Length: 228
Image (cartoon, rainbow, N blue to C red; front, side):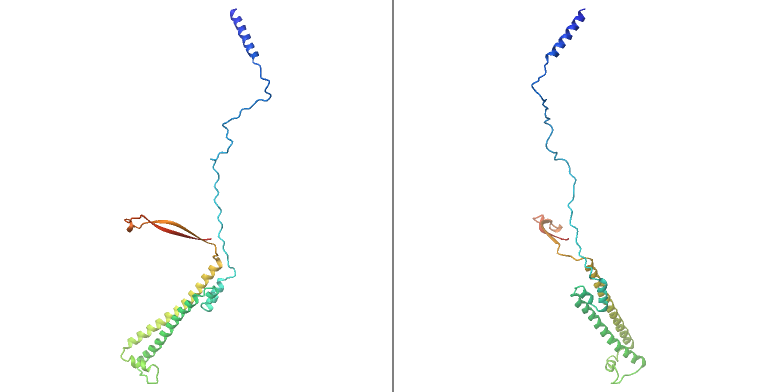
């Protein structure tokens, strides 16, 4: 009996305490609390994607009007003409200087070849030339030389003459090849004024033989050229 009475008393006490809490009707809209932990600034630690700087491509100015074939044909027709076509005027004296030396070698060796060939024939046939015969003075000059010496001299001058002729042919061919290379270079691209030069100060390490000097480094200047 007492137990039921105690439970009833506790029930009424709880109901009365709940009735006593009257809500505040003076506040029309509820105030929402702001979270002070939320940062209004963006996170600066977010990694951004790296984009390398785009470099300007090299500009090649092709000379389509300059033909390597025309340069080769001109050089084959006349040495140095292809170099003139390629605007390489300074090569013309070099070409004709080399061809002139080779031509002189041909004439020189051919002259002595004909001389010793005639003397060898005199010796071979046992003929003594007269004052009006060709190479009369030369025959008396080499009259004391043995026959084999005359034969060897004839073969030597003939060989040198043939080598000089081959040298002229080779120089003519090199002249045509040089004209082709220059023309091909010009028709491929030309270098314009887009030249960049950068100068930076720097230091160099001492060489091995100078490690005991007072200074460990040598001042230097670094120059870098960039063709764009």
